[in-house]
Image (cartoon, rainbow over all chains, first blue to last red; front, top):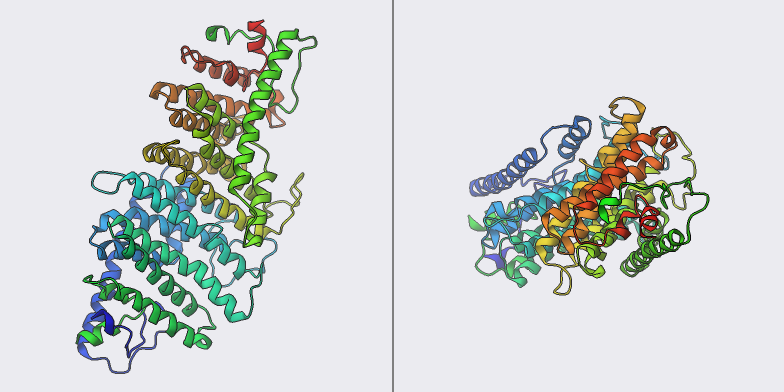
Length: 298
Length: 298
């Protein structure tokens, strides 16, 4: 089944801002799309519930109320959901990946908050952002969210969950992906602080460093926590890198000029899943191609 | 010896901006002050060397050069040095505490960098700060330093160093002290985002949350990593809280009006060391009273 995944015909994605739906999908495609959609939605709902439980609005409220608000004001990243899905894919329980998925969302929420800070050398106002708090609060809240995410993870050791070695490994994965070698590097390039090449080269690099590496990290962390073998962890990491980069490019207004690149990355992503013999890769592959599995199953 | 520490006569501190030196110190006080000064200087030099080795200026240079610069542009915090000293005090090797001390300095450096960011709702220019980089770079660099510090710590597991359980415990200590319940809370109050009471109440609260909890964390982490008993860890944590709060208040221009509070906190700090039976507390006590040990020894 997995080997047929690259011969897809439909190119619908839940994650593009302008999904191009096939004009007349067959019934089983609709059913399966609903199934994958409900799978991802159930993961998102569990991550949200975990975060809500972890960040109660408590004293000092002036600190925790913005933390709560800005955690949920950031758009959801499928990197967090991918962490849970990868854990399940390799045979782990959803619970084992929940703290890591929450930490990934929190790191993403902190970055999102800081990306929209009105700094004196940024054009303002940044479009599309409603600032509920003043910049001082948004800066400090982001600064509080980063260590909180890692604290949550460090606390998640337990007999029913993961051992300290795995948690430390996951902490290293997350700190690398969100730090100066990963997301922060992407943000630098995005701000034009260090030019790399053509406009499209920059877009690809930024999307690889931001969405790509965050998804790679999510997939690898989920596979580590779920007890995957090393080759499974690395296949899922590469799948995440390609899938996340695709998603990043699709979110840019230049995506229409990069169709060839997007198709290539999707093929690479799907190819990585082929090596996961005997695993139920249909749900996870829907991250790049939600309809293709349905079409082939039907 | 320890029980006599609270009956000090001289009130000199290395860490006040305006040390009031006794007019004619006896020779042994001078010798011992030199000894404690050299002790702290040797720790600082080792932490610096560890940080320099850990943050090479490598590719992408546009990211790592500011990270290197801003790490060392921040003033040294004795919280990092206290981590190493506490480790040695309970019988550990200096090496065991080095990653944690470096992480504490890095978290402090990130906070320092972000505190001096020119935000649109801050008065500018902030006095005394030379900005080598533009605000975008300083923001992102701080965002990169936080996960890097924790990555460094997570990587420091090793047979010659510490086990994963201790490292995870130390990660929880550091993320708590530098997050929304610790340093970030203090920064909120400092910015007047949430008023607590009188001006002096606010100063005390801010110094407790910022310098106090960072020093408490440093002392506790050092004691954990050095293999201290739980009661030693807690005594050193309280010592750090008092000593750090004193240091914070002494750095404010209102310190002159808070002498009574400072003396009280110093007494509490020294009292905590009394419970550390059989330990060489002279060097560590110099953090609040560099001369008093010397006077009593002489």
